Image 1 (cartoon, rainbow, N blue to C red):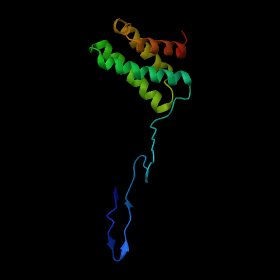
Image 2 (cartoon, helix red, strand yellow):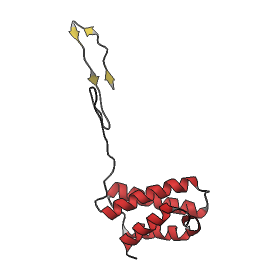
Image 3 (cartoon, rainbow, N blue to C red):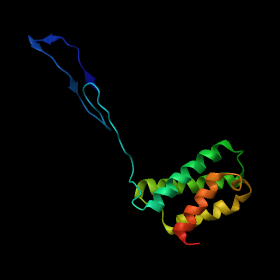
Image 4 (cartoon, rainbow, N blue to C red):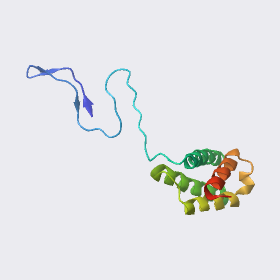
Length: 127
């Protein structure tokens, strides 16, 4: 919380008082603040999968929801969370996403983002 009342107290000029800060901040003109949350994927294949999963989830949000698309979105969300928080999704998580992708193939055949996720999974899982 910041305060700049510009008034004098007890004959002294008062300035800005900052009680606490959570996150990123900048003071002054023409400053830019960038805050990165999570752990960046160190492996380029994991970074590619993360981007593809995010695109797939955006496409799924526009699709008619079914049990299969909800399961695919849940698997994609779990994969996104794991890569964003640890830098990589483990083999079990990748296998679950691949299974959900396969089970939703009627819809995913129409989505370019699903094909991109499939290619990224094939690279990470081999085949």
